[in-house]
Amino acid sequence: MEKNIIEIKNKRAEYQYFLVDDYTAGLVLTGTEIKSIRDGKANLTDAYCVFIGNELFVRQMHISEYRFGSYLNHPAKRDRKLLLTKRELHKLQNKIKERGFTIVPTLLFVDSRGYAKLNISLARGKKFFDKRETIKEKDSKRDLERSLAR
Image (tube, rainbow, N blue to C red):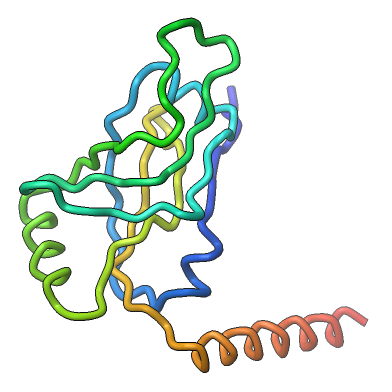
């Protein structure tokens, strides 16, 4: 029995940031949230991670309300707790104190056991000329693939 694969990417993160270090975190979700994620109804575009106390939360991650949910449905953009080890949390907290670093979610997926996981990256913001360079590289790569396909 093959399960359908759910992978929701944040394409904007690679364009706006240099991704330095990657982590995979679990999410604390309600029942209607995981059902919406399995339907593919989530968006990471504006999401970012923030420390509240010693815990890491993801903010502005949009998970649509479950269509069959009743009065128990969840709010679409609530703060969701991320589950990481203490060592990883401590390491991220120290890196965030440095100027220019932030934590952005890059991929939301459902693993083989049915749990929702979030890939997060320690990121440094790109300047305008870096973004132009990224576009040039992407265009040249696309042109090369087109010429090889002929």
